[in-house]
Amino acid sequence: MQLVLLTALALCFLAANSLLTRAGVLDGTDPLAFAAIRVAAGAAVLAVLAARRGITVTGARRWGAAAALVVYLLGFSLAYRTLDAGLGALILFATVQLGLFGLSLIRRERAGPLRLVGMGVALTGLVWLLLPGGGVRADPVDAALMIVAGLGWAAYTFAGKFEPKPLAGTAGNFLVGTALFAAAFPIWWGAPVTLAGVVLAVVSGGLASGIGYALLFRVLPRMGVATAGVLQLAVPVIAMAGGAALLGEVPGVRALAAGALVLAGIGLATARPYSRISSSGS
Image (cartoon, rainbow, N blue to C red; front, side, top):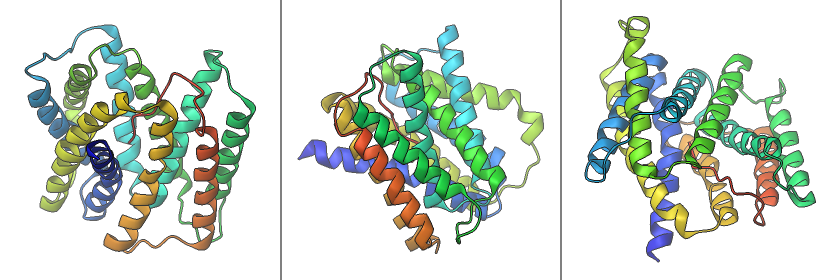
């Protein structure tokens, strides 16, 4: 029962990032400033959580993982200038899964026919979702940015596969990511921010990202890859429901149909164990 509750809470935290970022950007906070505040808040919380066990901030691998994290954060925040919360989460989630699938092929890992069919169905659904018209509000530039964010998160997830101390490494990644944003301070300094946007960014970074990822790292080792993949299908669903209830972003018929096709394809691909790589969320 405890595992179920912790998993449900972790998935809600992951979905909350889409809602919080969308709300913060809609309120008038610059996406770059939002991302900078978010990663700094996440770094602070993760540093406290990992302090007792130590924090890893050195090594070429740390900089690579931090760079992938920054790519994700930038694309994610910028994309929510126009994308609805649920639509953005769906594009992100599908891209992460497809990105990990591509990485597994590059590494020549075995991909059974069920997985190939499932990913083909998911890709078809994603393409349909992004086609113009049909009442789907997907700005091409921001949709592309969310795809970039998904690829960044896939790379970050892949880097985590080789992380001997997940919590210490994640804290280090967020600290290095904060340093990278600080180095780019002249670019986003002076960008518009609102009080509500700052609060939402802190909650997104400190609670939804910091504690959410810590919870996820706690539950993932206790379940199989296939189970984790299927459970994460709930993330875009939760984000869509939250977007409709809290932001008034009700998805259209085509968005729901294409989204269902994406989720069905990913569910089919993750129905059985297939790879040693797993996704850690958004």
